[in-house]
Length: 292
Image 1 (spheres, rainbow, N blue to C red):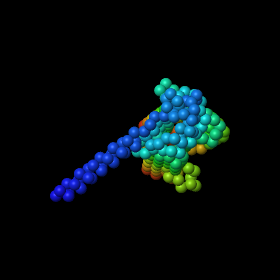
Image 2: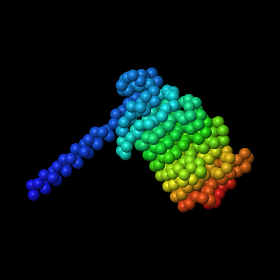
Image 3: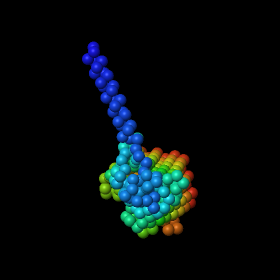
Image 4: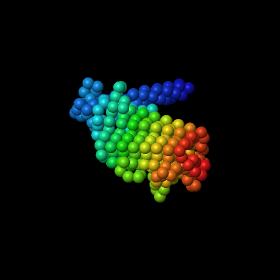
């Protein structure tokens, strides 16, 4: 009996120690970046780092990077977090809307093979191809940001699952050509790339040179809700172009969707799409809902 009690106590203590160590490991640090900082410094509030690229190379799970107002170069995030310990890049207090990530690089902000990353309160502009990219990265969040004046797609999630795109202002996509989707989820039809479990809600999407939201084949279980989509100039499809399966599309407001001067669908359900749930979507100055 004493041996059994000893084993039970040992297991209890080991479990408690594991929880304490996990909590300590996930507590995270807060770092600071400012245009007048130095990457040779410690990244503290008094001695901030200078570049977001440097900060992205230093973060660990649970860390937060607070960004002062100013203009910064594009960067990639290749170090992610874990459940309940995300890596977060966000505008510092009072700097929301004043953190500008600008440059004619291929991507403005690219999350690359890094899970559990959040980006919040920034403006991304001038990218040659994509403003915000999540590639092979799950549980990525883009929130309360502005993506504008982008060469092609403003936001693109590919080979990535369970992302959240919410409360963003997305406009002037496709400045370098016709492929200017607002939000592009997945890969072209010939590529069997799964993209699933995303939430796209409460975004304002306008002045787009292709779909406002484009759900590619092999996408699945995506929620599109409460977005405002306006002033869309299409090549084909609809303001919300639906392929894949098991999507829920509800409470969206869509207006002024055209190809040239011809009215086009607010929502276009591709014949290959399966198990699509639609409800309470409002469409004006469109040709309505195709294949609905």
